[in-house]
Amino acid sequence: MKHGIILKSDMDQWFDSLKKRGKVYGPKKKESAFVFGLVHAFKEMSLSYIPTILPPKKYYLPPKESLFKFKIKPYEAAKATTAFEEFILFGVHTCDIAGIQCMDVIFNENPADPNYLSRKEKITIIGIECLDYCDSYATCASVGTHIHKGGYDIMLTDLGTAYLVHINSEKGEHLIKGKKYIRELDLETRKKWDKIIEEKNKKFKNEFKAELPEVSKVFEEGFFSPVWEDVGKRCVGCTNCTAVCPTCYCFDVIDDVSLNLSDGERSRVWSYCQMDDFARVATGEDFRPGRGPRQRHRYFRKFKYSVLKYNKYFCTGCGRCTRTCMAKISLKETVNGLLDEKRGKG
Image 1 (cartoon, helix red, strand yellow):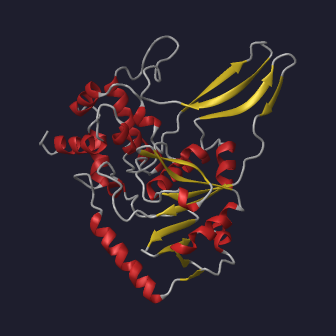
Image 2: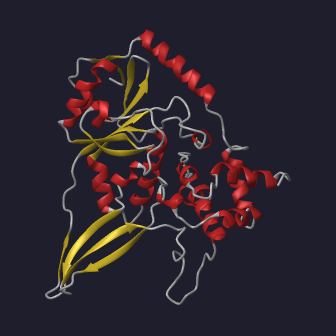
């Protein structure tokens, strides 16, 4: 079965069957925001949600991860984690699935990252299709992530009283196998689905003032644009934009030695290019002094450098950077500012 239908009244029993395969993590309301967390019942989740504070990449690359433990005298070292648990990520937006696909490219690059790949092997993704904008900060249509393009095992589309179930992998097939309440897609429901997607496509429009090829070109020519000076003056250096980004993958490695000075632990922790000392070397030189150059670097990592190296945009349009910016710096306004400057409107 490639496409199936499950009534919303049957979601509880399907969810209970998923829990037998492992823990389930999904979007949950937390005060005025949403987070991915452990879910025990289907009703605990909020499937209509603004992107979570942290993207689901945290399950692939944890904010802090123990790499190995060691002893100094005599020297011994052993991996901190030898086996990773199997679990399901439920209700993942297409923009966040696109972010995981970007991470896959990075951590598959030679030398491939064994921890990342081991976790990925154990994770099953059930996505939820967005039929309208999350809020005004999203720019998913500009980078094409409002449309699902693989990277998931099952994708759900809300049809009103039921969900369309798109099975996209062998893992996904295992999750619906033997479930008699998940039936084949019929012609009448397919027409309803087509109508819903037609209405969706009317709502999503390119949020940038140009298509991506022109955006890429303007980054190529805009390295010394005054836009970066303006952004730098406004930036407060809080690093929120990089902390919440689904495609930022920089990390630092830290050795913590116990008070007995005989044993310890090596960990990797998320690190951010917006930190004041990120590009500073031991002799004191700073290769990106000031917040303007650091912000410029962040944008170029999304719209230029990744395109040159991987032929892939590393902005997924989730809107998190704009949503969490203490200085109200907008990704959409910055990109459009570069476009306006090129066209003589700046």
